[in-house]
Image (cartoon, rainbow, N blue to C red; front, side, top):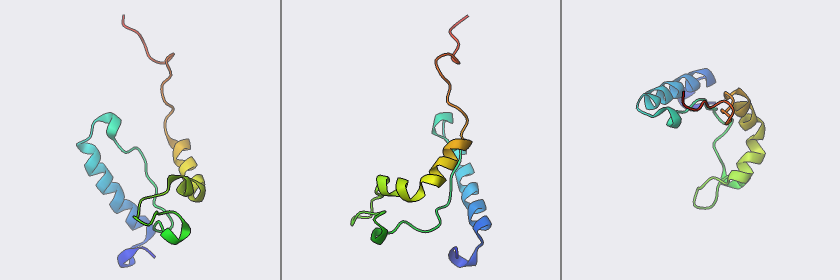
Length: 88
C-alpha cells in the first residue's frame, strides 16, 4: 500500500506532476521521458542496496529487468547517423 493510503494511480499522478515541473526547467536532452514506480522500496536484504544504501545496478537490473525493458520499448528510437541531415 502506498504511503498515506494513496492508490498506485494517485502516487503515479503526483510523481508525474513533479517530473513535469522539473522538466520545464531542463534542457531537452535532460528531460525525463518516462518513469516507473517500483513495486517496493529497494531493500538491502534483497541485495538491491549496499550497506551504505547505494543501489546495486546489476541486482536491480535482474529484479526489475522486465520493468526496465518496458520503459525502453516505449522510448522513441534514437536517431542514427543516416537520420541526421547535413547542411544544405
